[in-house]
Image (cartoon, rainbow, N blue to C red; front, side, top):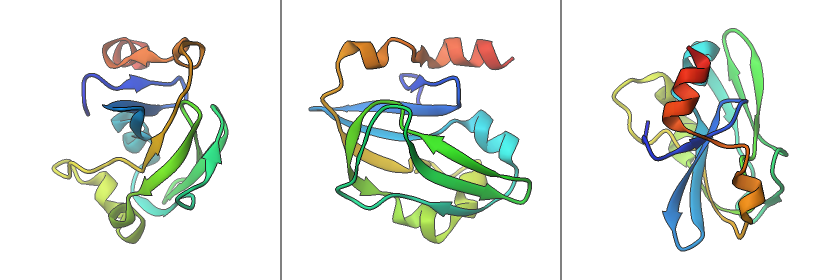
Amino acid sequence: MNESALCTKTHEYVLELGNSKYEAGITDYAIEQLGDIVFIELPEVGSDFVKNEVFATVESVKAASEIYMPISGKITEINEEIVNSPELLNDEGYEEKWLIKFESDADQLEFADLMDYSDYKEEIE
């Protein structure tokens, strides 16, 4: 996982791509806890979400989990490869584990409760 990602207490991450563009997904820890992922439901491109709103559902052999928007934004792209082959999330060597890309003009208040990846790793240990 990218060390410059910011993480939530509910195990999502957000990574700034520049020019008010971001990608989001679930952390490696969340993937590990879920077990073998068998289904992912992602939103439509163009959908707007506010911070902490459910934007996706991930199902594994163990459980189903809701995925929350780390900051507010408008979906610009979804990872079709993950939708078509959700088991790729479990593959250690697979790099493209993002779920959505989005545009956001979120203010600094929306980032206040996000943790640096290093702080997140300490919290889950």
